[in-house]
Length: 605
Image 1 (cartoon, rainbow, N blue to C red):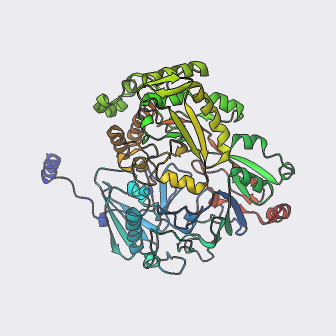
Image 2 (cartoon, rainbow, N blue to C red):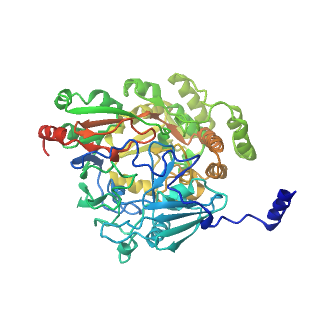
Image 3 (cartoon, one colour):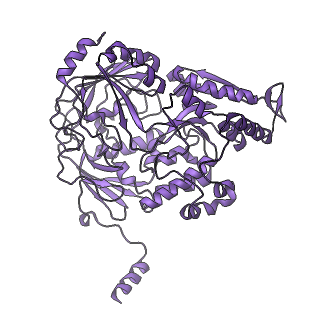
């Protein structure tokens, strides 16, 4: 009876109050579900070697050019690698699906009802100029990034209702009561910027200055558009933290800029670059037979990738009226012949991507489950019947000819007719045209077969290749018909889904809603995914979202690989096994003995 009285009293009093910070234990780490794998007294990540030598150089390629060292704003094209100069409150263990351990924060207190979170900063934390990192810097970073930064930050941290300093070393975030389960963890991913440095500077303007951070590296050299060099901070405040021990071993990180990947590959073969993450199946199969590789000076690795494959695709811009008819988008999908590409150009290396959460339990299969139906039924009138009645993967003709016949029938239903071999709008006579926007010539050979198949339908297609800066400017304005884009996914998707698919980001410059989606059904499913309170609920919401996105034919899915292909001049060391979920090059090092021999071999250094 006493428990019943207490329950009735609590209900009469209204919603329960959040726990007091004094009542909540301080922790060293947070896991999205379950408990962190590593205890509070862990000494280093298992894949890092605390005895690794320190020194050497890692030179890699970047494509195009850059004109700013501020990666957080809409303006400009930022240099590659700038994240290495900034510390975050927490850092992920790449061997766990989503667990964050203390970096700038030595202690974490999370309200059991997730209505607030507090971070205790390390008193020793310093920016590179020796100034202490304080709660005021965290507040400055949050307010500046969400108000003046890229739209990504506003989407990511939308459910923070207030941030305040408890004292100089403690910062408190109040969170919306019933929203994102992952929000406390992704707050830990926020880069912390020095408030005093930006006091007399315009944060929203591009700059080429070596900006101030607190991370393991500082900017050592800026050659705009050509090269950026990062130097290891010798007196880095956090070098002995468990999350850093055995990491950040390489003395200099260099990014040299090249026009495209073809030129960068030749630079690697010549010895001007130390490492290359290879994205081309043809190159991986045929381009590494040069003399240095045959002599054993170059090593190739395929590192398993445990993350969902996500979606790499031809992205169709719904802001163009001609693509608003789902029948047109489905016809474009039917014209893509993956099997021919895979055998003819990719040496059979890839698998076809079908799901937005490919290679995971979150990919929708078969008919909707009972849990999915509970999320989908309220939207039945707004959704096509096949979302409910047709199984996934979609049943489409395997051979190209029947696929093209089906595509042509869909285009006729959409109001197009063939006149002198050209597909035109039956009402206006305007031809159906499309342009695929690229910045890398390497992809041209992959797009051409799709355009040839579309030409057989009477669709006039073209490729426009521009330099990286032009490409980014057009992307910011959503000035394209079709691009090659990607929507990467983690094992625990969350707030980033709003920016991928949310209506409020459809017209926000530089947002990641590349498609231009503005659909209340998708908005609701995204909210359900973000608010999921268990692994089962998250998987169910992701499958429902995946199902609706796939039947919308908003992209033409391409292909995926479950490994990362790395070619490197054989002077590096690492600890195995590799982390299960993410590659961590920060845990690699330069072997001084092998480096001497390799660098004697490399030319043009």
